[in-house]
Length: 444
Ligand SMILES: Cc1cc2nc3c(=O)[nH]c(=O)nc-3n(C[C@H](O)[C@H](O)[C@H](O)COP(=O)(O)O)c2cc1C
Image 1: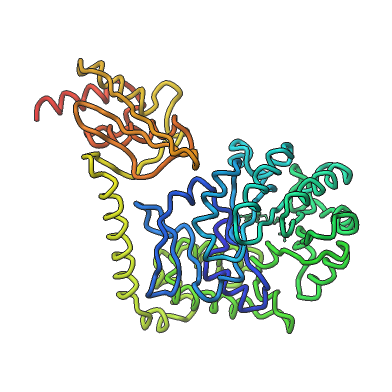
Image 2: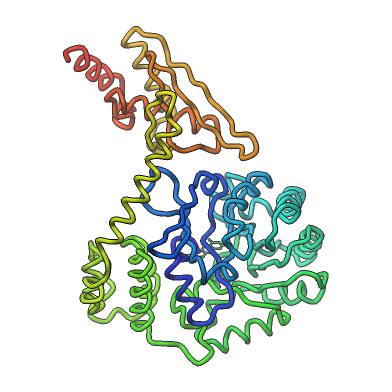
């Protein structure tokens, strides 16, 4: 679950009785950029993009190796394999998300866009199954008819995957539409017996452990059930001996968050999703939203002492140590005198005519100097790009790789503009800002 399935939340679900847990969907080309760091203080393995503060993925060394499935978003078998290899020795399996209906996924040919391309589905899954030492699985949505869904399932079953999770809704249906339990039931009955079928989509009718078993039975019975929202609302639903009060669950989540250095944005997001569906006594929800520090949120749950007694300084030292190590890695990459910064081109921040590249060109015209030269490199197996700009004898680039040549060049143009004192987002409003920057530069 995106932004929910952080390490503390997954450990909580395991503690309450979940058999296996999934990471949030990680996009393959982002995971490839990570450096793997063994975190001795927390007993975790952290995957961090150089230049970013928070790990993209944190895995518990002992408690998750045989329990965690890392889910990838991908549109390409080789790129998925390169991402999967990075985590292969630390996790129990790799899952491919073929159900996400979000615009970002569809535009990138990922998630439910794959459902229209069985050849691509086969290529991705076979590449992973044939080259990884751990089980591979995928998660799909229903197609509009049972026949079409079964036909896709049969193709997937030939690839050698261990299991298929079926979300019982089509790409155009939402969580308030009814889950197609009969589709899942038919699939369980007719799918080749070598594949494990996991039913998904039943949360809206679940409020206790026994409801999970009832959903499983209605779906076949399926071999297993994947829970999303019901677990997000109260992860103690995995307890066979009863749901716990949410306040106790939230406190346990906060304790684990202290142990594993979870940061405020994730803590708040998870708690908001838990409390968002409850009666809001004493405006507790608003009070939670208004907290601005970790200390304040722990105080709200009467856990001030636990927070203050936790090794805050030790954790900060570790964060600094990791950051320094990553800075060293970045510096090593810039041996040939390239100015490198973390920068990302976000399309919506610019107009169609004023992008970082065109702003840099406009600057050159105003300054009567040669336009920059872009040297863009593709890292072949991963299909990711990095661009180095040669501008007035100096080289500029981003610290990270991008999924297209265009994004890489725009990113390095941002680094170049920022380094010469031009704010690219302001410059999009017109040439006068660029002229003003130039005249200041000439006066200096
Ligand atoms: C907050 C949220 C995050 C989600 N993140 C993911 C994800 O990362 N990967 C995925 O395959 N599905 C994701 N989903 C979809 C769910 O896994 C699931 O298919 C859907 O909610 C239906 O199952 P449920 O009835 O148990 O909630 C997410 C859903 C929600 C509400």
